[in-house]
Length: 158
Image (tube, rainbow, N blue to C red; front, side):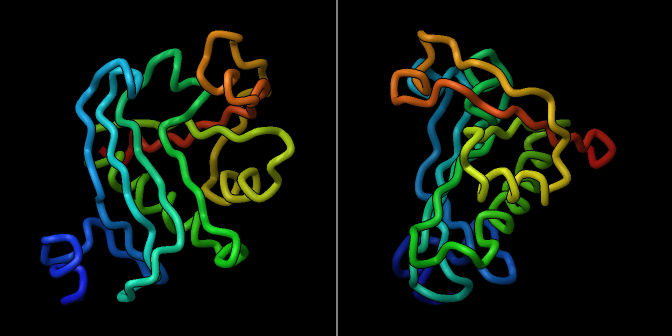
């Protein structure tokens, strides 16, 4: 883990998993840019290695914007897909959500994104609905007009 100290100025990764590590790259305080919620941004790295394979973020809180965007976002670079790294990253972020006193998270995907749907369902998320994204939402502006909405509850972990 010495490379993490050197590379990121910290002793250990923020969240260490079995296959991956999430390294906090920045934190943004609530403002209009991040829907008025505290947001943590992480790089996803192969465990104990310098290989960055994607990124993810955790948005702490709930509001109308996040109903469609969700509390967790993730991206795995194409060469590293198919190894359940997104699932492991989500598990680590769920643990972090619990530490931030959240009793549930929303996680969403576009209806045609089968890989994300499988990741979300593997988390044990409950399907809530498939719904149209409002025209004034930033997701709609980038072409995501319909979302599948899921919820992961963990009030019993608080």
